[in-house]
Image (cartoon, rainbow, N blue to C red; front, side):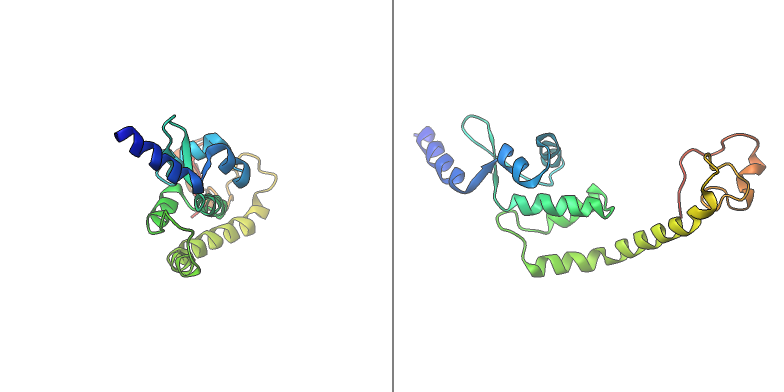
Length: 160
């Protein structure tokens, strides 16, 4: 009897769901990336009796949201936080998006400010090649690292 219930559930779920291949094709995201998103809890799939993934159609919007969020520089952790507040069984509404936008505004403003500083400081940096000049505005303001000795003193450069 449980198998009959599983078959009925399978048919009911599959009527509105899409395969990982279709989700990939329609979203423009590689299947491997979709699997990664799923492993991180960003999207969710049901499994068929044959263990194939099936995604609710609203997952297309979630994937688009993930891609756009990454493009503007948000971390997967921040994206996951936002998606945790969105419904999985329906596409987000305009009200849902407005709420998220308010939460992210300060993050995006800070990112924009950082990129503007980078753009403005980059002019002085072109030609350096290694960021080792004493006057490098990006990595070594006022040759602070020169006090520590010769050679590359810092590999991971923060632009803050």
